[in-house]
Length: 240
Ligand SMILES: [Zn+2]
Image 1 (tube, rainbow, N blue to C red):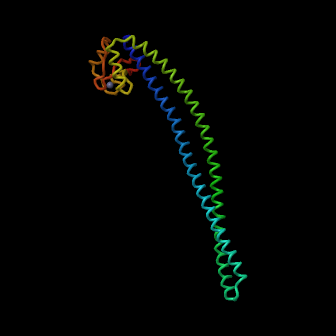
Image 2: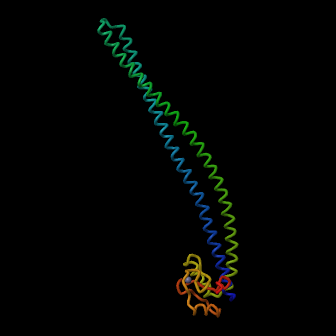
Image 3: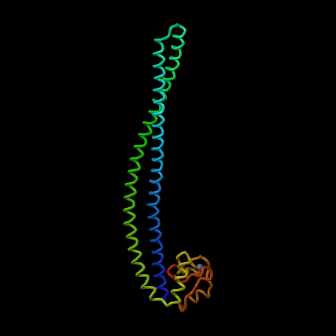
């Protein structure tokens, strides 16, 4: 194998590693974003629950006022009872009071029912709030972990880029240009092996002429199908 091919292979393995690390970085950042979105959604739900609670409190207050006015109506009627002169009037007011007492009892039941719902919602709010607090501290923890991971990855990438520069310096301008163009356009894989006359980049057969060219080791050899730079991998050849 020519030195140039060896350098290209090293370069390829460095670039593959860099691409993988950049992918890891994205995934790690995505983890944080996903968690942050989850927490945000829960916070919005909590806010909505808080608004519901406020509304139900207003509702209870207004019904309590209704109840008070019903009570004062009853009180007025009871005062009137003392002033009536006929039995007929007396029993008419008594009937009216009974009707209002029945209304009042329904209103009281209603208010108690609303208070139950209100208290239950308040409990739910508190539980949910605690849950969110827990998730927020999980998020902080995750963020710290990911930041540390990203620093480690960045350092590794920097190191690989240094190495990359050392290898690119060993290549002639044309070869490097070919390589860079391929690595940018062929899913980051520019250099692939040929095993049993098959390109390992696109898995198409290569011609005998291509194999001969590879054996002669003089010039860069490209796959006719995918255009990648080829090298012979005799270790993986099948025994015939
Ligand atoms: Zn190919």
